[in-house]
Image 1 (spheres, one colour):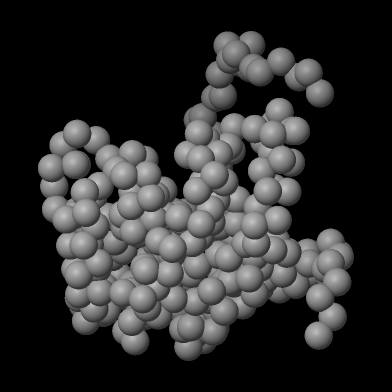
Image 2: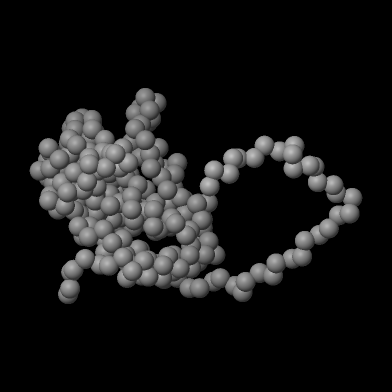
Length: 261
């Protein structure tokens, strides 16, 4: 198979086609009352955010939500670990994309020492049961791991450093992850060993080529749910009602944005 760089024209054509299918999937999920959770995990700068953005571009933010949780508050740290994630789970007809998830404990918290060994071990024991519980409740759970090589991650980090408009994407934690590459690799291996379960397996996305990774991930997501086109015929646009008694206030009463362009 030719693995040369995918040209932009081909990428955009395929992306448009897949995004149309995503809209069909969205309407099917709404019509059938499905509850779908998609977990996006992987190395820093592996391209998770780019895929989520392309999925969300043409779909409804009310039906397909993104859950990107910040650092837990002091109160949340005292809760059951999964509690704050449960609050973001979908209702019928919804899909939720977790831009990082409960797997923070198996990754960054484990490597950076933000949790105790006891908390980590409990997570490894309880996570498979938690996910089996979600599946038994009727939730469709799909988990993606974005895999990027050492050289490609370094190239992307340097590109962000060199571009002031993208430098905000680099957090101190991202920079530390370069130093602790091997430790993160071990943490990922241990995580897979415990949580790559039959009911909710991990699907690995080769993410060294961003364009191919985006198309491959979206294509795979579409294949995970047997959907049909339930979009009906286009609606008829009604004529505007008139009211002879309505008098519009003068335009001079309104404050307009300056037309700079």
